[in-house]
Length: 116
Length: 116
DNA sequence: ACTTAGTACTATGTTATACAAGGTATTAGG
DNA sequence: CCTAATACCTTGTATAACATAGTACTAAGT
Image (cartoon, rainbow over all chains, first blue to last red; front, side, top):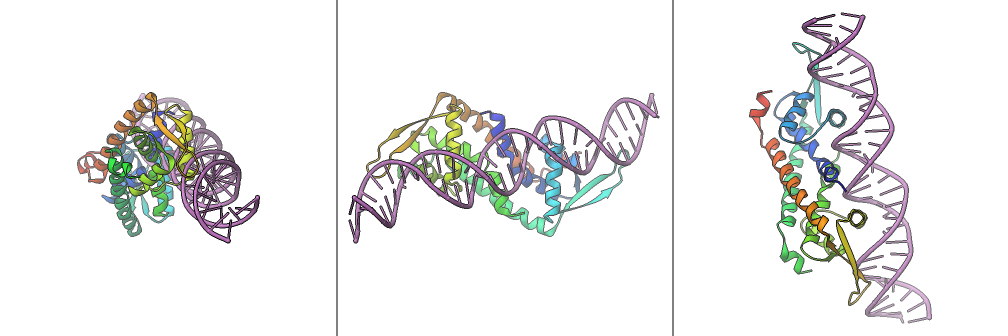
């Protein structure tokens, strides 16, 4: 059992949350998303991101439009739909709840345990 | 795209972390683990927990011994191995890092984004 | 003795996502 | 034309959570 694998598993779901947040701040294209996540020490690669963006698009959470770049190939800029914004709000609650619950477990909740 | 699905994905990896923590506090059997996680609002079911405990056992992170119960079937009490303790310490760092990174993204890190 | 209920554990197929790997396409420069 | 940089795309693999369907043990009721 490798630590790297558990880290990968931990990222599941969280990447989607982070991506939605990044997009919620204003239109952005894939490479910049990767750049920001990587800078924040969250590992994500194209093979993960593009299918994720496709899923989000298909679910109606994001939209995109092509923008010609000054130099290099055109870029797909993503924006959040209204549905996406609502979904993100739910994820906000989910994340806070999950972090709170997990911290409750890891900070040694003896009371709960002893009273089984 | 359903919120429940993303929540399930978010739990991946985190459940393993929480379980290891619960066990690290002293021997405990499966139903009590479920009880504690459920009380902390982290959903987990037998179909998830037992295979997880099996994986942890196979990976040498936990051990177990049978204990006859006063009433009802015998129970499998789990304890953390030394390897398990070390693994847990790595997961502690992983979790803190992941939470820190995610919060950095969701609390609107404009500076990073604007300087692309 | 048999049945039911509660409890504990087991196994397996399904689902969904992160990732590795291998691409295609556009633009710019040599 | 070829190479390099950049952007996007696809697909198969690996993994874990979960639903489902059990088996097994103990106690209580009939």
